[in-house]
Image 1 (tube, helix red, strand yellow):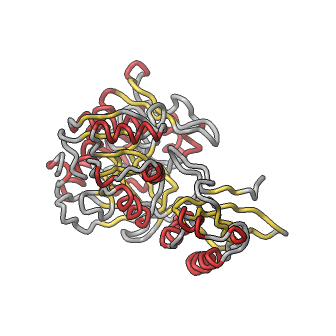
Image 2 (cartoon, rainbow, N blue to C red):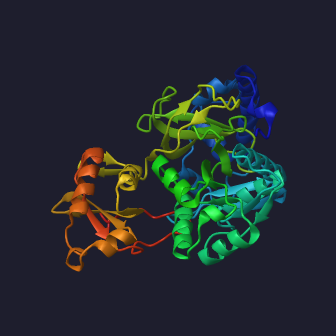
Image 3 (tube, rainbow, N blue to C red):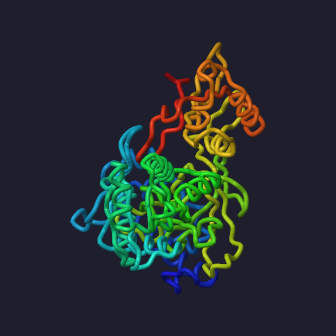
Length: 436
């Protein structure tokens, strides 16, 4: 189902004209009202009059997360504080948080793009949506909430955590749609299995999962365990929150809502644009956000774009699901390693669960990579006691598979079921002790 037929199926020439018009307006606005952007543009010797259409975007300087932190809390506002009705921030775990401030118009926009997102998976006013994204300063909970209300579905605003209660709500209220992080969806499936719940007997039909990278193999795992159709959604606090891009019913890459958020792919080393189909770093410019617009924000996410038509009828550019992050990339003895590569191998391996943790440390001045991965209950029960805590053939098998994928050796340790900490939000996969 297409929520906004006019804008989601807009012809390319008309879309470019709309994007150019909106870009001209937003550049003039930030130049006139945000000293941070005026200084950056002056330094780059770019004036608003130099930006005539969307192809001129590359003349503008990038914005980074560190720069956004430097002007915390109100340095990116383009309106008076009296016009701001809601404020969200990033976690701030590595410094001052990034602030996203919303006008009433921004809340309306957020509601609309999240309604598009949910409609892509067929959510209607007949659904009961269990929203297990965290409510609060994190954008996931309220972003999904606004979309659920806009679509007209019944919202169960349970937030994250309290997994026992999550399962009770699913059964008692006939939940048809689940919204949460993909890692938490797996945790819910695991807890439900332990409680004797047969998800085939519930009314659950679909799920919308985002806020962390996840693989196609992980999607299949979630769909098999929960007996649903799992959709990938994308967003980030710096831009607006969830609702920047989403999969349609074909689950074939994510449609970017480029009438509001213009994407670019750049070479992360040089900053130069790369052609469609080539992997690089994702960059976004907000075209309509009123409170805290952002110009050419470097997301650090790795993906690629395609403009090949989608048979769903939507005409927007599509982005591949995230392939990793430049700041999550590990360099092990000169080799680039992404957690997503590790996950793809582990999910294919028999006898292990998709719960793992990566440890990196230096030994004798050499980078060493270790992966702890949980055994299934069945493998753990079947394994003789004298084999459970020493090297096992299964570990060597997985090490070989990882070496073929990563092209670097890593030590694999099979650990007991449920011994790796679970996350009710974003999963923490990497422990890098090299700088400690």
